[in-house]
Length: 568
Image (tube, rainbow, N blue to C red):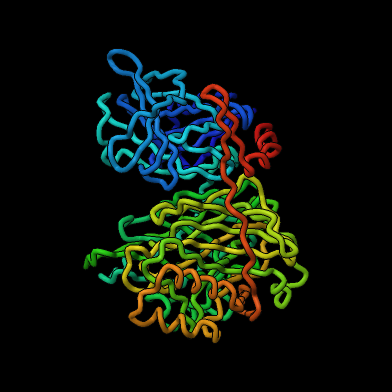
């Protein structure tokens, strides 16, 4: 296996421990933007061990964990280091934002820990298929890796020396992008951010003129105020948008029609490099296109007098890649004159957005096979889970994405371990699960942070002219009239009434809207929500402590792919 080193910056800073090539640990990610924490890992088979090497710029204690939601609660953690009396290392689990508890069964094994040139390098392993209830179940889905470290060997509160990054440990797709000198900025310039809880700002602009076609291959966020910038989206505009402006969003400007997603970032995300065979096209025939940068500011404390110049840095090259990439927006979006209401006091309320690709034929025919290589999932504060099902001939064949522990504070573009192929006539179903158990008022689908969304941005190739495929239940349907009146009134629904209301929203006709890059639309009024499979889970059969069998439906399907990755 060759060493896979992701070059993410023009001037590369390699730490001694991270630079050394190790054929047994072919995968590597920096867990922080300052490149002070590096994780390397490798494994031989899904039934064997996975080995980690954590390299941190400190001579104090270091910690590594796998978390269900990016936080401490429920995390599987190891902490160790090299102190005056030698090495120390233990397996822990966290029950909250407090000192983790030592596991009854120590399933991680320390292989080595050294200090070198101001760094602690800790190597350890565990079985991939651990069935200890206090351990995180590693599957072929992305895991939220957490880290923390101290400046001494006294393990205590880490303060700001912590972080989270989502990494697919078993289906890792390495990036070896070398950054060139060419980039352009899509940013706002010193705009005033009002004290509103939610504010959207839109800037319509032209990007630098490129006579011939180029490819964007890497997107890097530049966030001036991380405490208020919630997400950023860069859209390309239809040809009838011909003038720049810099205004609040959604006030009737012509740029509201710009809806083809080019690049995106959300809170918790970082630099995103496209696969080596895919680039986002820019220039050439598209040189006269305008773009709209949309920034959502979340200002819950109502701070006044803030200005901001955040944006996206997009690196581009004239060395064209094999495929043009694009983003398809799917899920639920608010329709004019229709309300989608989530009742209060609901612990697990499900919403659904359907995309039937057969509707594409009204705007595009024939439809090529679309190969999905990455996904970004998006809800607001009430979101707890997001699942994206893939159907063919009315039968679910796969999940395009799963996040059973969705966290509003950690929204990243997740590269899939293998591409998922969408064929003409396939259906995509986005399911979001919400908890409004602490709310006393209804929650609406809308733009505000305390409103809700249910979206899945699918990154795919080859690019087509379709920009979005969204749906909304026909909430004007007669069967919903009584429930709508109850929810909008003062009546608090019982648990049974909430379940019935959810069922009605799922079974009424779904209104499906497909749009293309020129804001042409196709419409279907008879969309249906199909049943979605239960999320595959790890099944453990414990005969005794020394002999355990642990299986998972997802991981079994990934075996061949892992061998392909290993020989790259």
